[in-house]
Image 1 (tube, rainbow, N blue to C red):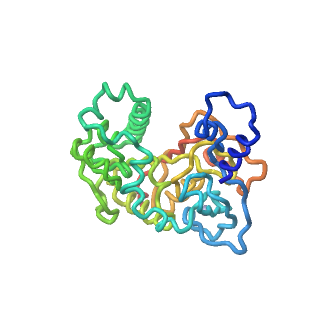
Image 2: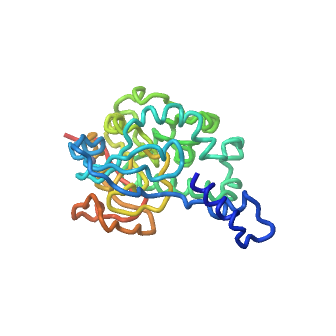
Image 3: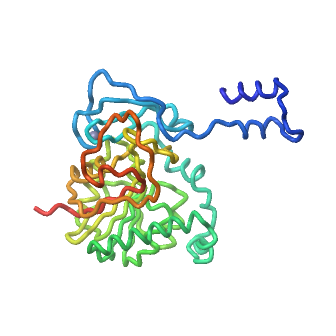
Length: 322
Ligand SMILES: [Zn+2]
């Protein structure tokens, strides 16, 4: 509505509109900038449990950092121990979203036939695809560096399966709710799981969860991570990558919807440990720093990874041995 009012105002004033502009082009020109950060934080009456680190230290809430519905209508709760954000009531919010809505609104490339999609020619022509394949290739080399043979690989939140395709793994497994990804996963002969409970212990020597766990229902985070970690073999390694989600101490400047968890580096590390993981690597791959908040609601402890102000948070772990 704000846009409409501004638009009517602009037109009524008869201000110096170039002759070819119409209502639509003016609307586009004066449209509100996209929102990537919360407007303000409010203190809660009493603390509640954090779904990321497990302590009873959720003490703030904010508006959701996006103008896109239905996410813009949500609130985000923040933990002062790990700095992470979490959206309450996500189970209802996400019902059916990833099965149907996600691919059509976020991934407009799923009409292409698999043979073309995975061809080198097509990959080189698409900037987005080049980026996805580049990221998957980097993640696979990290897994190998930390000792994974990458022979039985699970991609949790695989999308069409860039990582599995590049892995050369003898047995490929995918967890992906998006129905439009099925034909690609079938094409690369990946076995699909439809429920996390189907994963058996000690099954995979490589797991990638790339830009996936920030989409989980917060209440299911630790249980899901615990099942993933438990499904690693003795020499199995898991790589988790999430976007920087530290609204509590940074002014983030990238798209945030449809995320339901906003991880700080500390939050991601604590969640992995709480779920039974032993951390082998913590690092970021983003090139650009994000500005620090003047009035943060969380102060990262003095640890090089926890104080990171860049994106692409990566944690590599194995099953804790004891
Ligand atoms: Zn926490």
